[in-house]
Amino acid sequence: PPSYLKLQKMSTSHKAHCLILPFQGQSHINPMLQFSKRLQSKRVKITIATTKSFLKNMKELPTSVSIEAISDGYDDGGRDQAGSFVAYVTRFKEIGSDTLSQLIQKLANSGCPVNCIVYDPFLPWAVEVAKNFGLISAAFFTQNCAVDNIYYHVHKGVIKLPPTQDDEEILIPGFSRQLAIGYTFVIVPEAERILEMLVNQFSNLDKVDWVLINSFYELEKQVIDYMSKIYPIKTIGPTIPSIYLDKRLHDDKEYGLSVFKPMTNECLNWLNHQPINSVVYVSFGSITNLEAEQMLELAWGLKNSNNNFLWVVRSTEESKLPKNFLEELKLTSGNNKGLVVSWCPQLQVLEHESTGCFLTHCGWNSILEAISLGVPMVTMPQWADQPTNAELVKDIWEIGVRAKQDEKGIVRREIIEECIKLVMEEEEGKLIRENAKKWKEMARNTVDEGGSSDKNIEEFVSKLMSTSH
Ligand code: UDX
Image (cartoon, rainbow, N blue to C red; front, side, top):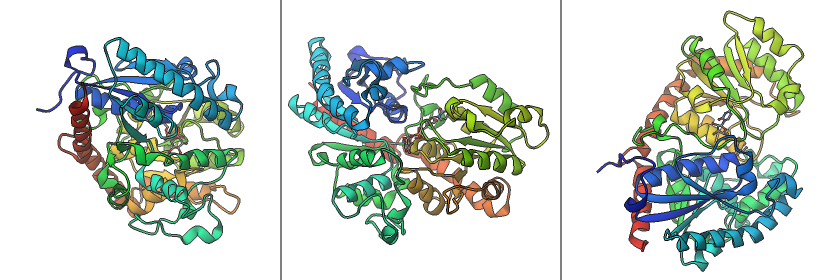
């Protein structure tokens, strides 16, 4: 029977218990939270273990799953308190292993033993904890399979990142077309350390029982088939609330955790007053900062495109806006109205009929959300996985265009204007707009009953049920 189960029904109906261990970052915890809700609807009890410092900063906590705090050794300030990323990760491993073990013991003592740990592979030590307790372990990759495949090849020593000019044409097995590594992993301060962590995700991956990937089979067939020969891979995405996709989970409006407060009413009221498909939605996610010069070019590109726009500028970025920009926006009417907000309810914005295109930095969550809601994209990737994601959007799925940087690394206003016009209104962008609709359909089907992700989740759940006490 289909799983029309209430999200919060628990206790006696549960047959298995999963402990979910995300990395501390909202773009990591939210996909795991959405996955948890799917598991819970299939009668798996869920406990999310996250750090005290992370919980302290959240504006709102989800009500659909239980959350327990563990320690990363920096209970007051988390990563900021640690000073450096390396210090943070090192201490988290040491303290986190202990406090996670204590939590598992506590849950067992309270008559609710855990039988599986689903962990973010940024925290590979969780596998050892799982093994010590004889639990099933599943790595949950929040990025897509193409990007994971690149990091895998770095781990194997086949390629080096960041790439040199000579590497640009290297072809990595598993890609259907020439997806050169020159496109991926742009270096920023601390990126080398982050790269080390990305590569370490594979350090003990041969010991895990499952490798879950936040993507779906139809999106990345060739690379998934290739990686499946190496690891027990199952795609389980897109991890978007069911209300935007198959609508099979009741009361599933809640998106997730954030340190930012969305300006919901303001955004939606404003969108309600704009014509259908008239708005360019612009966001660079939760952590990416733009250079002041880039902000300026973007501001003028948006204005010159002569389209309405809704632009998320986090408060820490606001000082980079051109002088008087916000004041002038308030006076604008006609076809070029703009609203700048510090944070918005992105899924509701993408779902809105007034939204015609998404100018994005290509964070993986944003791309999956745009795919799920059928919104074509203009991409302006900045670092890490974003350039690879931008190439997939442009060349493989053909649901967007990439706004190219000049030799100084800046995307100029004319290019931004050109790309927006192409995706929003021009004949040349018609195929892109049609493809976006097709992928939306496929995203819904994959999590709906019998779809590829749904089958994978079912298989995972059956395995958990068969091994639970
Ligand atoms: C980070 C990395 O930057 C990215 O490269 C990697 O793929 C994931 O981790 P982030 O930059 O935050 O992520 O981007 P993204 O993955 O797109 O996540 C942003 C999330 O914030 C999305 O779920 C989006 O819906 C949400 N969001 C963004 C809002 O809810 N409101 C906003 O105003 C902006």
